[in-house]
Every structure is written in structure tokens, then in C-alpha cells.
Image (cartoon, rainbow, N blue to C red):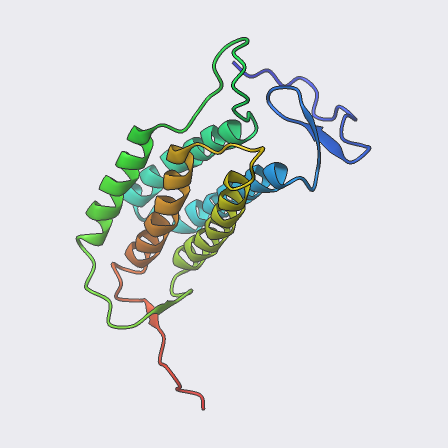
Length: 193
């Protein structure tokens, strides 16, 4: 259980922050950047949900589950696997969370017409917000991959797969929010030459 009875602690005033295992890291540390970007993506998804205005209960339910998963992912990233076993096991993204995303992608994509061009971010406000969230997730993925390739850092494989699938889900959700693709804004190559 989480108990937050104080919002400010002054612990980060000198430019560093605590990880879940108590380590102190600079606020510009790559791991902190990664879970901070996951938090940013979660906020963009919240914006998308607000713009759905409850017009799509199915998409809203999916996004609500994802927002919770993103807190799990942030907890995963802020507790690096050091190989030391002390205290309760840290929260980790698990394969079933990735599997659920894949099922939701397939369900949403199954009702969309095939694409004949790339989709520009836009259409409805909800779709535009979902595209914004998608690009933030892609940035988080790049940071996580970079972090995973550092010899002194670990990022779980399910966490990497989850963030990769999430950007795909946000893409199909944006199309679904655009009246199942009917309101998609399509790229017209070279139109403005």
C-alpha cells in the first residue's frame, strides 16, 4: 500500500532523487529519464481519455488499464535488478500484460480498414492526444533500450516488449477514436512541392 501524507520532501532539492531500492541518482540519470518519460506518457493518455468524453467505453477501459500498467512499469524501472535479494520482490511487468496488449491491438485493428497511406496525427481531439501519447511512448522506448544496453544496468525483457506494443496499441486506438479510421488524416506524399 502507498501512503503519501506529504507531497514535498525536499529530498530532491540538490538535483538527485531516490530509486525504489534507495539508491540516489541524478535527476538527469538515464533511468530517471526513462521512468519520467513513462509518467509523461501516462499524462498524455489521461488527456486522451478526457478527450474521448466517454464516447468509446471500450477504448476508455483499455486506456484505464494501461494507465495502471504504466505505474507498474515506472515501479519496475525505478527498482533496478541488482541481483541482491532483500525485502519484498519489486514490482515487474510480466508477459501476461504484454499478451493482453496484443489481444487489444488485434481486437481494435480488426475493425479498421487497411491503411493505404501513413496517418498524420490528428482527426478528433482524442485521436490527436493518442498520437501524442504514442510518440512519447516511442521516446520512452528509446530511453529504455539505451538503458538496457548499458553494461551496469538492467531492464526486463517484458518491460521492453510492453512499451513496444503500447505504441502500436495507441496507434490503432487513435484510428479507432477517429470513427474507426473514417476521420484519419492521411499523408499525401509530395503534395506541397
